[in-house]
Length: 433
Image (cartoon, rainbow, N blue to C red; front, side):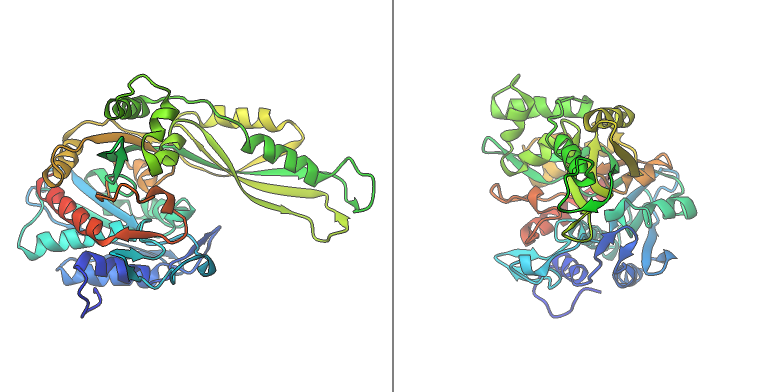
């Protein structure tokens, strides 16, 4: 239950409490676990008269679900889902305790404030608003809070979908994170509604050579070979390739900026702090994220490895891997560590109309633009059950706040006013969709 005695609005108190659970996910199966956060969520859901169910297939990796019965059980159910884990935070780099849930300058600070304990709190507070007033949604709502999203859902949503598909019985659509927030284009506010996600392909590059003394003349050096491959891949300028969604995005950015027909990268730059996020959606990206080699300063190792985070447009996974192998050459091995699917659904239909309408009620006249997310969410796991996923965590943000830069960044924070706005929008959506 939210911390009592605070003058914060309930949605902010819930987010604050969730931030104070250290649910760090280090990846590769190493995590502090989501159990306590899941139990907090379960207790809140139970206080609303719901019956939470837990699934913990791996010790401390806890998922929790509750179903809100709708007035019309014949309608397809809607899934509202979030994840409870967060990426690591190095406390020395932060201005505040990353797990303190501190309020400063009208903002709630802490790891998860943006990704995505803010949306978890908005879901809980919105459902509470509706149920406490005696209302019921028109259709069933399936509320799910997953473990392990920050590791691709391997120990979270993927196992839930495999082992607890009955949780999602009758569901055809889902709403989660990384959409619905505002950006500023040429001094005009607009909202991004996420209708697609790039595919994730995590790869490991492995270079082999011959071990030798560090003082030797030694052209067969695994570290050198790996470094050349990493540099070649990291510096590759992948071409812009527009999908249906990004074509609509670029057209909308052109209309808002008065620069229709301009280069897509230049149009994305009109979005200010969000430009980097949007430019990533226009192309494949291959970012080196880790290096491992050697064990002593004067020993040339016979093996060196690098981790590359590859994000590709939906349906281009195999072609991208073929290009990567061509770029790095035959001397370096490519190992696929994890691979998932890309998603893209139409920016149309009753649910999309309802999301656009809900934003319009609370921010009249502000355009809503479809976009393809550069990262990924648990919507990918739900797609295995035929559930179409959208990103809609509605936040009206200050134009100068680098919101997208705080995903996995330092000093993550969200305006409390934006949380209240999001709760109001989401509550109205749940009443009408």
